[in-house]
Length: 115
Image (cartoon, rainbow, N blue to C red; front, side):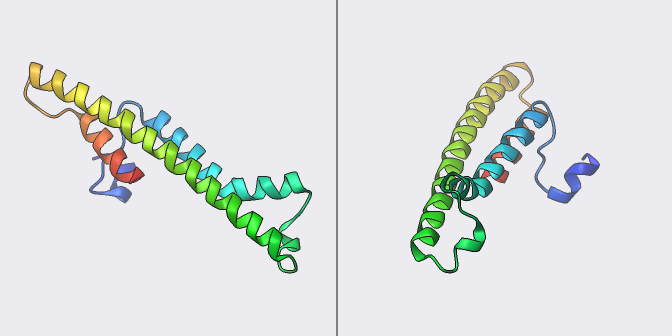
């Protein structure tokens, strides 16, 4: 197992498509963390304005939840794509050798990370 994967053992997420997976995961994490802050910027407000403004706090929390909803939708889409990849790879592997490939192992690990 690669050194970088030991931190996530027993999950294996390296392999074909690893860089794209990490980029998508980073984008999802960014969307979650930034959606509330972007709403503040659009309103011309800052985090310092929250303590004295209950309505603003509610708007911020709603924006954070929207970010989480968007992230969950993106994660769901990634899981669907990984499932499709796994099915196709499993069919090809069974036809060739009857063995599990490293890309199947990686996609399975990536699904676990997303869940």
